[in-house]
Image (tube, rainbow, N blue to C red; front, side, top):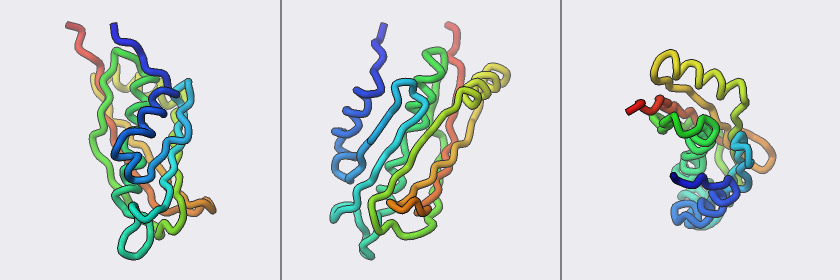
Length: 153
């Protein structure tokens, strides 16, 4: 039986993961109940574009695994959760550090479980706002996950 990784350990691992470490992405928080995460992209010389604003790929990367990680841990071992599709809409230049947060309510988790059990699979859509230090919107990310019950073999 595999041991479950705590949210705090996962946060530590992600903060030393080369793609995040090298691009200035830091996981600030993952709640032990797996219902919340907060991430920062620190603006620096290695993650700015030609115009001196946040590189779009770094903005996109900072949103990548979190809904899958949160939902996987909330649903439990009987479910498979994958990222299926993501898109980003850039709203304004990221001239400062930027932040995003992810949250899963119990109602949302219950709805995903119910629909997955009814349909065999379900593809919930999540929206993530990337904001600057003043709380102004920099980008909006839409993520479609694929949730499926593990087969009972």
